[in-house]
Amino acid sequence: MDDLTELLKGVLEGAVLQILKRGDNYGYEIVRALNSVGFESVSQGTVYPILVRLEKKRLVDVSTQRSELGPPRKVYALNPAGAAELAAFWERWDFVSARMAQIKEEK
Image (cartoon, rainbow, N blue to C red; front, side):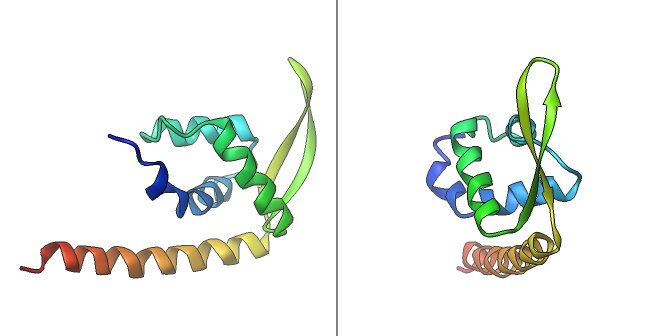
């Protein structure tokens, strides 16, 4: 797919929250999860600022985990505020998605 950067800007935060809903994770693995579903252009340079923003908004809990291959890494966990924000994200997504489908199908 051609450059999706502009279109993805508004949804990547929700995608990261959804990945964290599956379980605690760290930045590199979140990037890999996004890449594995076809968002190959998403890099660590895109995801780490999102994680910082989520941390500042207090939507995730952050802990440090030892790493066998280097310095300790930050592990992110969805907290109740993040779960509420994720639910609100999906409500907004459903609204926009339904309207876009309607526009696409109108003649």
